Image 1 (cartoon, rainbow, N blue to C red):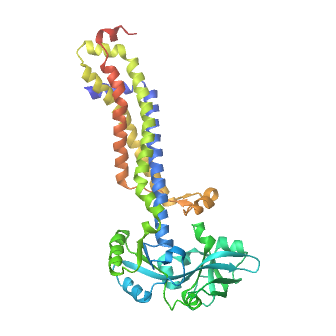
Image 2 (image 1 turned 135 degrees about the horizontal axis):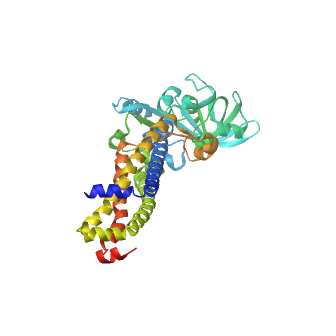
Image 3 (image 1 turned 120 degrees about the vertical axis):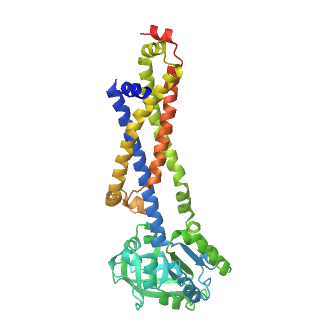
Length: 405
């Protein structure tokens, strides 16, 4: 009986009810979309950081990260690399050399980070070849050829086949220089990599540094991120003399953003629900105050205060209950479409996003569990929004209510 009365009541003023429903639909749509948008950004940043930059974990000499001095290399790194690659959890592992110094072109010079790599293996770990926009990727047999970032190339005013001179310290603290030709120019979604990194064959840098064929860094790409912590612990036990760190230790800001994402999004959705709640409270309170005399008549013919209380609550739930599924459905369809098509912000925020390490094309997505969580939050908001209008109706006295005009 109460449901029938509540259903009829919400359509006595259809315009008002439809306005509230529209507000709920739009609020849920916006909330879910923003949820999916931020998840898309963060998941993409995580995948890019793992796939193109830091991998799942890295191994160094304990002293190397303090000032990147060339003498702090990993001894017997090739043996360790072979052992790591045989592990069932590992996709591949890349041994790298590093040198910090100056790169000089005919008209300009700049500081740079010189990274010695095995071109084939490095591409399997970081997909470096896919970033090359001009020229060609490094080949194993290349001598004195380099890849340079687009921003650094523009700063130095160099292009393909331009000659540059790299100057840095070797393991004996002696200054060494060598001339290289630009074979390729890469463009990264992370502008920080473009501004400093130069890649060359590891064997060329090994010879200049005098590192005896070793590596300063071993980057490990795993088949599944779930294996990261167990594998890190395994390496720490087997190689206690080395510094082994997982991706969230290498990039703590990324780990913090991912760990706190759920909390931030719940706060964001709660703010939207709070704003909607005020609108619902206002509408239902107006509805109650307009029907004071009617409520008085209902109580005078036998309807109890509690039944009146629950009738107002049911009216609120019916309005929100009709709107919420529509809002969720629209949001689900929007997110599904944009997950395939993407949101291209290249024309507006390419440089801004690149400075933060994000791609300008975002693919929003949201797991099904979050739709249920949002639905629960909407139900809680509806319940809280109905309490004050229902309490106002509950407090009415039949005789006084009937006298109201």
